[in-house]
Image (cartoon, rainbow over all chains, first blue to last red):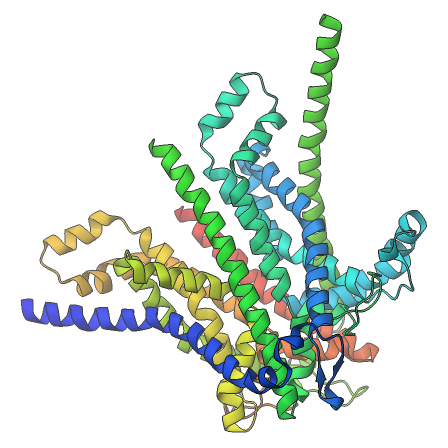
Length: 309
Length: 281
């Protein structure tokens, strides 16, 4: 009986260990397979691949810069729009709203994260794009049109539309992490501030200061999501590999380049170039996510120490 | 002196009122956007929904047609993904919860969390080079496999979390009665955590049902009812993408109707999960 126990334990341990190991193997295999497929392109174009401005598959000319530019710009727009709103919601839910109100609101914000990317894309094409073409775009041109980023023809399809859609999509993610971080800040800090006569908002500012590295982690996590977001962006950004100042102009991101062109890439060098740029995207998002995780973990260990000490 | 003190005081209170109201505005605004999106989907989608639409296959523009084959394809690939992804994910979660308090467990946890954040299109490329290129064509199997890979880390982490909620005294009780470790996990801990693991699995299924990017060049699309895993297979999401980016008004209407179906399914799963977990925690 004891023997079947130890034998069973060994088998059981081996099975669940193999499953856990498979997660590491998947990531290792993704890197290995993509690296191998990207070798022809790496050998041919070298590091210049990342800085080339021309993307002409027919002439075997592959430069990734327009896509890197588009990815960075659309993600930055998304962060600028999303950070204040996400912080606002999280503060409202943790510091102000009564529990009965906070729960349903938090759930509804989380539902935004459950809506598939392709649905955001559909909504972007038929609701947001016309809205920008008819109202938001002309409004911005009237009042801040002297800025180069708001000049040019407004079609509704372009960088700004992609940035706004991305902002919507990362808001629930940033909100939920900031909420967790704020809830982890010990209650005694708030009581101390209030007891010294601070207003509710001044107390909140102190809490925010103490949670700052966790908030940074939430923002970095949102950035990772924005950088990798594919379908919604593909549908509204216009898929044009150009580097221009105007946010009304069409652009392209790494993820949408892959979504729109991968299926038709039959030529070996073209495929290799696409996989190389995919590998860049993979490594960048992997590093961003790892960084976010470390920032959020640092808060958890700090507040645990504070609670125990 | 009291004069300046009161203006200062008034300013502090003013800022307090302004900022606390602004945070409420943020919350109201975001919920308004959610309602606007869902409402628009409902209004646009409902007018094109019909029995024929849900059962027919795509037809040339202007002749009607439906998304029956896409519904079937999504169901098959999601089932395949669950069939592969759930056992592996749950087993990995069991390892993390029961044996994972060491450097290996920490590494797996870290890699799983970062894998969750990797863009799903990358998984599509991976499966394309690993399965589609050697097989010579896109297939439902490749699509299901891509979805399975996306599910594994999500299921592993929620399973670990749910097993962590099982009280330690239950394990100790069973161990004290002489049960071997694996019996304790299999007969005591897993049944106790079963409903939690099931809700986590449902959320993961809802998540992959909405995935488009990993299917674009693994499963591709198909105009016909297809029951074979080695053939290209249609899915709701890829079909929505094709209809949405098509040039015709009729296609757009079908995209909205298919979206209504997809979003309803995903929201129902999310709300049910919420409803059932609410009672326990």
